[in-house]
Image 1: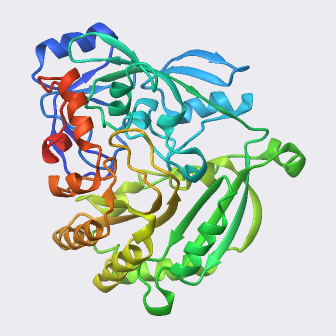
Image 2: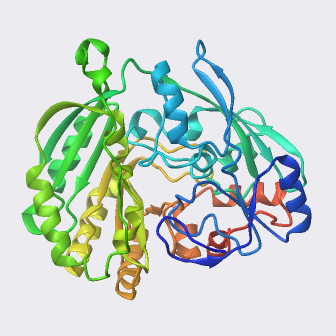
Length: 436
């Protein structure tokens, strides 16, 4: 069947199999030249695509164990984060790190070593894992952690499924009193003000910024910055009991390609910036962490040809100059994104291919077309000149040169992969494209 990531680019004809237990996976390892595990298909590009075999993990979605006293849970890798939160939040728990959508599997979160709005204080998801059960290329199930088989563990967290099939994961949780978030909104007139707010927000648990990528001059990088904390019962009184998730809407058709253009994005960005309500309010965790989940199939907005996301991170020493160069080039091209996100990362994580490093990350969506690909090649050059790196979970078009320059532990990853999968049973279109 034709398959793609969330960006709907590229599309690849893949042989799809369904996970029905360990023996199913072992049989596929014996009978197929290669395969890749796939969760809910929310990586944006080609990380979970393989023409020979894509193993759909969504059937493996059970909770194995839950220890409320220790604040720890063990689940199968195919469990959706959305389903897990429905179980955890009423019991006073939340995941320690969450990406910007809850429609991802736990296995996918590990494979991408996802980060969240709290990376500066919590790191990536892999930092909170107690142990993993991994079906390796030789058919053996290996248990690994930061203490047990650490090379396999660090290659798996952020390894995009190339070390084996994640079967189960045990990880720590955080305690919460309500499902509400105390959100503070601040307005920044330009990039310098936005970065100053981030630097002043080290004590905030969650911090994220929406940034206007089409402004220039004194308004370059104007932004709305959102700080958040899990609200306590004493703060929200009876509001928590009445909190509800926004009604889901669905994009019913693929939008025409001309809908998203420089003018429409510029108008949207101007209105969004002006409508940002400065101040503090209490909102449900769902719209705070997952605003786009309220619009089902929102990827259809970019039309039938799909879109690509460019998410990069710059080391702190070169973040200011790098961001100015990136935003300036995007504004000059007049092909900006209305989904532009800025975050400040804390120190990097132990995963060999984990994306975060201490510095600023910028994420932007662009329609998939020749003009976009030419622009992104220019952004690549800016990124490499400032010692940055690209996020594998969002990428669909970068080359090996960008990979080698951005990931200093790439050799460690390749060594671990060669040890545990010498015949390269676990492969994807991405791994071939990036020479992993």
